[in-house]
Amino acid sequence: MSDDTETVATRLWRDRVQIREQERNDALARARIAEEKVAILLAENDRLSAEVARLRAQLSPDAELARDETMQQMKALKGALLPLLSEQPVRHLNA
Image (cartoon, rainbow, N blue to C red; front, side, top):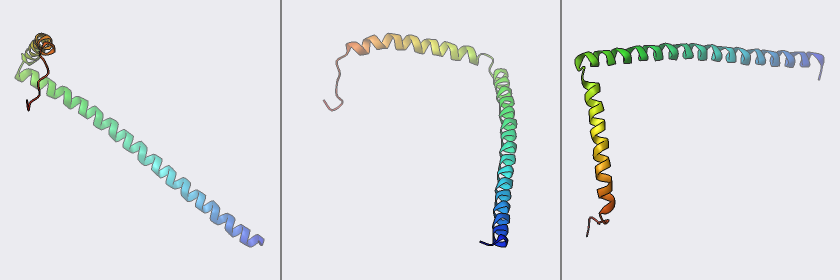
């Protein structure tokens, strides 16, 4: 190869490398912007979730208490039914 050919090839290769580096830098910049937007949206989501919880509490202040009571009743019912189920023989629906 002549020096001119090598110089042209070298310049083309260097240009190609610079283009790829610029593309990479652009992609990294877009990724940083996307991460910032996600952080902003997550913060907004948390704020809205807290606002929804606050409004629900105002709407039904005893909802938490009722839910806890329901969960305790379900746990007690499960505790009472499990022994009964284990005592029953297995029956097939078609039998």
